[in-house]
Amino acid sequence: MKLPNSPARLNRVLLLAAGLVLLAGGAFELGTRAGVIRWVPRDQALTFVTEHPPRWAAYAALAAAIVVGLAALRWLAAQARRRPATQLWRLAATPDRGITTMHADTAAAPLAADVETYDGVRAAAAWLAGPRHDPVLHLRVRTEYDTDLTALRRRIDGHALPRLRQALEIDDLPAAVLIIPAASRTRVR
Image (spheres, rainbow, N blue to C red):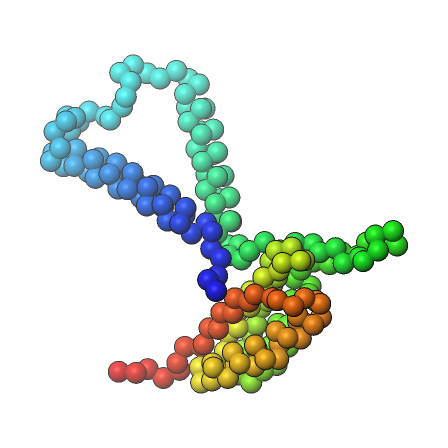
């Protein structure tokens, strides 16, 4: 199963477009200053208006720069969140007696703790995305360099996942498991 990364394509397109615009502008400016591009005289400033701009234009440019800067910071913050959104699950069978809610990450935490006890595992993180009736498990496991990855995957499939399915009382739990082996400590030449 492919790990979800919905903003990746949009991010690449926006970065490519912004990079191309900046590259073209910088190349035009350098080409004009060096005398290679002769559309604008070398000593003339590159402006779109011939007279002095009104006083409010500087404030408008500053406000626009602040808005663009804050949007860029928001975009960067969104990049740090590289996992699917989790939800609150309602667990009450009889709503007239009260409603119990649980964050989906709370249900996945024991699985991660269980996997961390396996031989060769350095760390594990797990989270459940989606609604209670149709969740998807995402499990990221960091291992030692010499860990048998096939045996580890079999143990996760045969031990950890069935226990989580039983605890959640669901029959089918799709799982995206990412196993990341540590880098070799010896250099190969």
